[in-house]
Image (tube, rainbow, N blue to C red; front, side, top):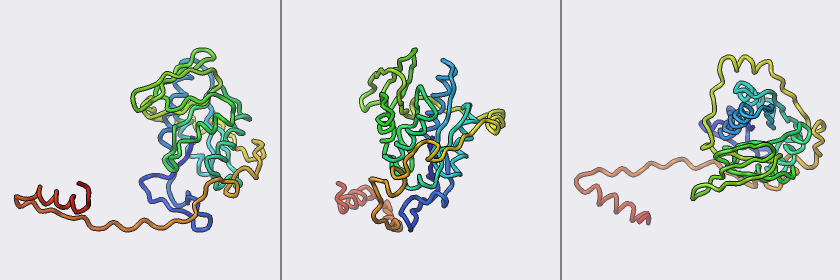
Length: 253
């Protein structure tokens, strides 16, 4: 589960290392990860087990964890270390995989992408790191004993994909409707355990994470240009012709 900058606020890059300035914006739960938590809770209700939420990020990411606990998750693990700052998707998948190996798992469920980077590659990378099957873009999940079947969303409908547990599943928003935390759930979340792991705790090699280990980087950035005033077309009986003329001048038609 990931904390991302609120899309309603202006996002900025830091001038020193060109990474996203997360301290300058409000953090919110990545929307698709809420669907992942909901699906995990539904599977727990149907089959039993325990839901553990894992997040990686600075101290303020604890807010994300608390919402998942209020929804009904049993416990949480916060992977937090200054050495992780600036990690790209590849090094993030490594760090998360190391943490998951320490925690232990039968099924990993996460959103198909995050609203800050939108790379959509973490689920596949994570599965490769863990050596498990990957079932991506799930709109429906069924677990039967040691097997899992999903309906994978495609441009033309869906594919039915089956694998053996343990596995990594990424979900889309069509899969369910996340529940709202109840007052009772919010109060209970304050008493649920949250374990904090550093890179040493999860046996993460320092030279494999962080900005220096990133395989992608921001070389240069500039502020977005101000919006120019739009063109107003007054309809005096020839509005349609004027609009067509304007579109033709811009080579839109």
